[in-house]
Length: 479
Image (cartoon, rainbow, N blue to C red; front, side, top):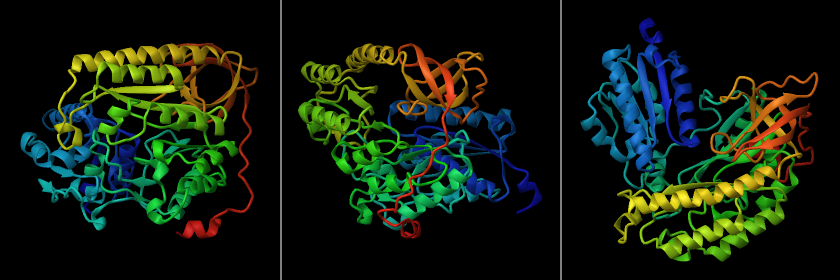
């Protein structure tokens, strides 16, 4: 590599979910390992990389708008090359190259390691073959603990992808077509990465995958996530361990029991239910009904006292009637979720639902979305008020974006970026919490989704569990 290439500055823009962020971190690690300098200043970048999301219409629009914005810098700024990666490439590779000629190279989600070639001097019009709907296993990418990676998260928190792809046939989702079949990372690889991250100062580990509760099934491990959580609970330095995206059919008692027993596995479960009408769930290829889902949430809460349950729903799915929506609304009011998100249905051409009749007008879908969120807002406000005068453990994130006079943090029941926060407006004498510290906070007030409180004391560092591993830690780290 020439001295001129070593001076190139690479800027990354990562869009979409945390899984996409990990992909961006891997690509940043790969290019940095080859001597390229990373920059957060897009105006200073010689090469810009946009890692796109292509899940639904809103995400596609954001991705296209960002690509076009970065493309302008090729004529108005320092940028000499524009590379587009990620899910949007998997869906619209030729379209992107044809419609946006400023793009110099495109890489899909299974081509991350080609980023070094793409940012190099001879990668103009790099276009790798489009992967088939069901690519061979050898073509599917999944990073491991030896893969270079540069964290884009705060130093105290890190995402770890424990699996990739998805085998669920949900009729509204294009993830299997974009990401391929479900495949788990070996447990030893995950544990070794967790050890390294903890040694670097990471205190909160967030396990992600399209369905984390499916972890290990392809490796022949029964209750794989439960075993993985037990092993991670022994990693010195980790204070919180959180997993995201649980599939309703895979929430087993073994996993819930591990959550209940551990002081450091967050009492938080993100379980996208999508609907409560049995007719709509059947059309979504999800299965279940309001009664079975109610029983599921009751079982989770019974086995894990104090757990926060987050879910997401889709309204406006083809064929959704007023009666179907009323059943969903009644379900939300009955169950009283701790956190809830609502999306309007996005009609994606590769999805099974694309060919369904009785499409719901967008105006009606948006109205239902607003009505459901208003119902949840009342539930959230009531739950928040119920927290006043209680003491909770909070991870300090730093100065609040609302005011430099406030600190901001999160409880176990608040995941980064998607849930509310705790605003700290006062401290006990002698207490000076910093980003990454865990403190006990007495809640003194509540807003709709956020809490307000006083930091009263620091939380003592955790002590890992010392009992022998059920899997054998040495063996687990070799697999």
